[in-house]
Each structure stands twice: as structure tokens, then as C-alpha cells.
Length: 324
Image 1 (tube, one colour):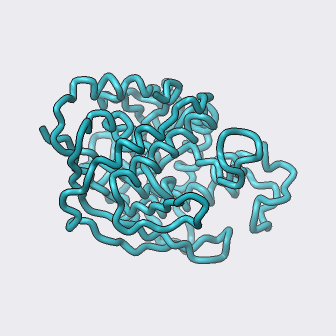
Image 2 (tube, helix red, strand yellow; image 1 turned 90 degrees about the horizontal axis):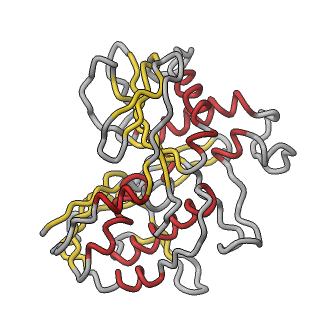
């Protein structure tokens, strides 16, 4: 399953006079700041509100990271669907300060993006921390960037000035080995840590927004997202047919949906000159059903790549807890 899927998990530390905070869901501010910084550095038509029509769109760094083209007629997926961006910005929560400073964010780079885009993310993170006139954004200085393997061991990648090593790749095989001993699972509890926005399409009907998801809805969207990332960013094949997995997920039921609630969020997009709706559900959901271990590798992958809409803003963050 997803045999070519790989990614790296990076943690960014900064030095600051006080903890650097960007609100309840920092991914919104961090993603916006990184995008604006790279746009200023890379865009050859900065006054344009869109990448449409730019002759450099297929080669432009900003466009390739933040505004990839939609899927074409060729390939296994529906025409017009946007190619998922190959990164996720994650909140680190309230980690205490260490000798290296404060942890600012976690960055997940998927597939080839860890080799191609990492230097530009480092540049943008450093630039974003510089003091700026007329902004309330806290200033900081990049201290170090470490790479975490699947066992959470840290390896230095950048010391705040220079690159010191290569990021460690986490393979899908590492995740499968990590959950290989999990048998006889009685229940799964999914902790949704940032707004998760799901849209489901039933046949040829228009897609609908899900306010209280079933296990099948979650597995369907997560499997499809993983497959897209596998094909377009990891050089994989779409021989992973997740329909059988989704069908099996229909036998799993939500036991107690009461901790699930709807979280309203929005942000202003300068490129679209409009407010974007970032609503989604949060909370906990407990699931019971047969052969739950079958879904565990995909769910553990979902802890890194997130699920649903707006994942580059850190939305759709999940954590899965196993009960025996």
C-alpha cells in the first residue's frame, strides 16, 4: 500500500524574547506569512492577483508550492481537481523552551518537495521573523531546524545559518512496521485537533459538506488524499485501489459522537480579495467495528498529512488512540 510514499518531518526552533504565538490556530498565520514572503521573492508579476496566464507558472517556485495547476485530462483522477500541495504546516502546541529556543512550527514535506523546496522554506521562515514596520507579528531569529524520524529521534538539518545535514525520510513501510504488532483492537478514538472540513460527493451529485462524519467518510477522503500525494509527489502508481478499504470502513460505527462540535474560522485571502471559509468540526470520536487494525497504517499516515480541506494551514490534524 502506497509503497513509494515518503515524507520528512521537520521542527523549526527560533530565538525570541518571548514565546512566539500566532493565535489558536497558528497554521493560518504561518501559511499566510510563508506564502507572502515567497511571493515577494519569486513572483515576476507581483501586481497580478492570480498566477493564471503567467508564462512562468509551470516553473515558478511560488506557483509550484502554493498554487499548483489542476489535474489535466490525462491521468487517473477527475479533470479540474487541484493537485494537493506537497506540504503541511503543523502547530507544535505549547512546547516548553529548550536550549535552542522556542519551537515555532512543524513542517511536513512530502515526496520530492523535501529536496526541491526545503531551502526556500528555510529562507521564508527566516525572513518572516525579521521585524517589520506596522505589523503585530512577533519577531524572532531562526535558531535551528531538526528532522524527526518515525521514532521521534532528532537529527540537525540547519543550525540557523547553514545546512548541516539531510532531512530523514519517513517511508510508508516505517509506519506499517510501527503498527504491525497492533492486533485485537477493540476501539479507535480519533482526536481532531484543528478544524476538519470534509466534502463528500455521492455519485454524480454535487459535493456536500459533512458536519458529523462517519468513519467511512474519513477513510474515503484520507485514502484519496494519500493516493493523490503518492502519484503526483512521490512518483508512485495509482495501483492502490482503496475502494475495498472504504467499503470495509462502512462496517465501523461511531459510538459516541457527542464530543464532536463545529468550529467556525475564516481568513482573508489577498490573492482572492475575499474571506475564505475555514469552518470544520473538532473534538473526539470513538469508533468500534471489525478488523480495525486494517485501517491503522492509513490513519497513522493521516497524523502527518492531515485530512480534508485546508491542510496546508494545519487544518484537519488528527491523532489516533488505540483501545484493546
